[in-house]
Image (cartoon, rainbow, N blue to C red; front, side):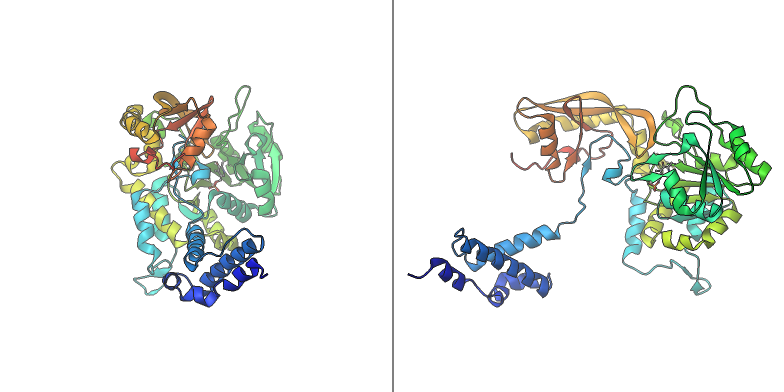
Length: 461
Ligand SMILES: *Cc1c(COP(=O)(O)O)cnc(C)c1O
C-alpha cells in the first residue's frame, strides 16, 4: 500500500510554480525575488514537516501563499510603533522622551530626501561650516560666547571632559556623582574620557575648602553636575556654581556644569518648579554648560554645549567631536526648535513638552469629561470609569521630587485585574500605555493632546 504521506509530499508545488502564481507575481513587484523565494521555501518546509508528522493534508497553492503573505506582513511591521502615552510621565525615556514641535518635524521632512547646504557656503561656493546658524541661535538664547552640538548630553559630557582634562584631574563633589537611567555614571564617563576623577566632600555636604584643598598642579577642571534625578535633603551643604567659579578664577581653572535638562525659559512663571536656566548658569560664570536636546527643551535627541569661545573651540578641534556629531535630521529639528524659542510669541503652546507642563488642570479635566462617555462605549459592559484628581511626573530624571496636578480616568472591572486591563489597552491599535496605582489602572490625561487617542481600537476579548 502506498504511503499516503509520500503521495502528499510528491504533490507539493515546486518553488517555481509558487513564484509564477499571480499572487506571488504581485508580491514580486514590492519585494525582491530572493526574499519571496525564501518565504515560499520556508512555507513549503513547514508543510513538508507537518505532512511527515501526519499533521497536515496537502493544502492548495493559495493556502501556501496565504502563509507567505502573512509572514511578509509581519516582517514589514516596524520594530518601533506609535503608542499613546497615558502614563502621565511627560518625558518618558522608554517612550522616546520629547515630542517634536510641528516646526521641527517640518524642518526634518524638508531636508530628509533632498540635498542641503549642510557644509556648503552658498555665497562663496565652497565648503562651509556645519552648525553656524545653530551656534548663533544658542549664543542668542543663552548669552554664551560660543556653542556646539553632539549626539546627546552623555556625549557632550564625555567630549567636554576629554577635551579639557584628558590625562589630568577633574574635581567633583561626592554629592554629585550621579547615575542616570541607561547606565550614565559620572565616574565611568570620567574614566572613558581619560580624565581622572578627584572626589571631594561627603555625600551630603561639600564645602569650598574641599575644592581648594584638592587643587594641585594636575587639576584641569572643576565639574558641577546637576543632581537631576534625586535630591539630597536634611543636613546638607552644596558649593554653589558662583563659589566654584570664584575658586576656578583664583586658580585659573575652568568650571564645567552638566545641567542635564537645562531649561531655556523660566518654568516657575507657570507655577512650576524652577529648573536651572542655561542663560543664568552662563551669567553666573560657568565656562562650559552641557544639556540635553530632548528633555525640557523639547527638541530632538542631542547634547548641547555652550560656553567660552576658547574652550568651545578646543572642544570643536577634538577628533572625538567628529565621532559624536549629529546628522542633518537632528540639526534641522534642533535648529527649528531653537528658532521657535527665539521667535515664537507663545513657545509653551508650540513645544509639546512645554505644553504638557503648562496646561491647566481645568483644560485637562475638560478633556477627560469629553472622552469619558466615548471610552465607556468603546470598552463595552463590565467596566467602571471615573475621573479623579491625581499627580503627573515630569520624568527623564528631571525634577524628581516635583509632581504636577492632573486628572486621570480610572478604569476598573469586577472581572478583570488592573494588570489585565492594562494589557488590554496595550494590545489596542495603537497601544495605549497607562499606569497602575494602588491596584487600579489609570489613564493620565496630562500627556494626552487629542482626546480620540484614548478611544481604543480594541481587539475583541
Ligand atoms: C539626562 C542627563 C544626562 C544624559 O543626557 P542624555 O541626553 O540622555 O545623554 C547627563 N547628565 C545629567 C545630569 C542628566 O540629567
